[in-house]
Length: 342
Image 1 (tube, one colour):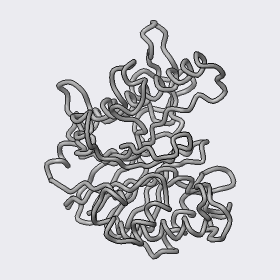
Image 2 (cartoon, rainbow, N blue to C red):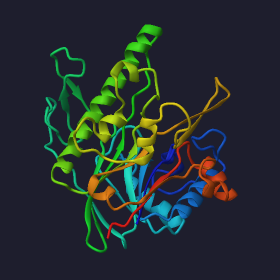
Image 3 (cartoon, rainbow, N blue to C red):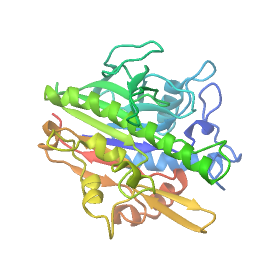
Image 4 (spheres, one colour):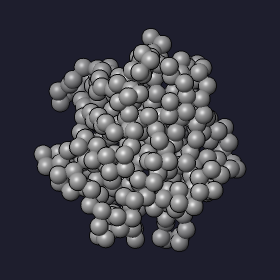
């Protein structure tokens, strides 16, 4: 079985309000890429992936005018993909939903959120991901109220052979310090946003520990937008979201070989899953942001992790059409796990 995660930059901008693809010469939200070019590139990438399930990060919007599931299923139908059914959880207000596209012949999948719903006062245990989490972020004896801007997608899953497991799709993101003016104000806003992201990681980790405690097979996948050495604030907090979600100390840990490599190799070549153009530098920044982390029950089955990087992965680089499509489709590249889950 092939499980994938793929952050698609402004996927929402490729659909009209009825969920139909707009394959025309209008500009997409990607720089110098038309909607038709991005859609065609995504078709090439998804066809090459041929995945049983794809956790789509930045999926089409879900609101009173738009629906993510029909849009994703229209996309799958346009390219005759096996992963042709979609499921979404709690929607958000960012136009960047989290959804799963999957092959219904290989998997049965359902939205299955855990935790208790909360009111505005929240809970300090491990509330449902659309609720409010109370936590003291800065050790001042005052609890902060934390919400997910993009609530993680909790799924139950069952293979055609009857194996059951859990999936959590996540997109943790530290907001840019918009509206802050002056170096000190920008720094204060950036630190506050980073602190909130770490609180979200702690919330997510607590849910993960509930599954680990009962030895329930679990896959956590998506974009954590954070990692060892990624920005100057890591030293201030001493750890990254990736380290929190994986697990620290003597407790049970999740496993992702790319994360393990990055954590143990601070200097030198490290895997990357995203490539951003930085105008000020007139060059590209590469980073490892996308992960497929698994519990011990799944890790012991083996499996092959792969980042579909157009330049770092020789199989992708050897196919010009796929190499160009990966560059055109998004600023992130898919990550896959091939594993026997029967």
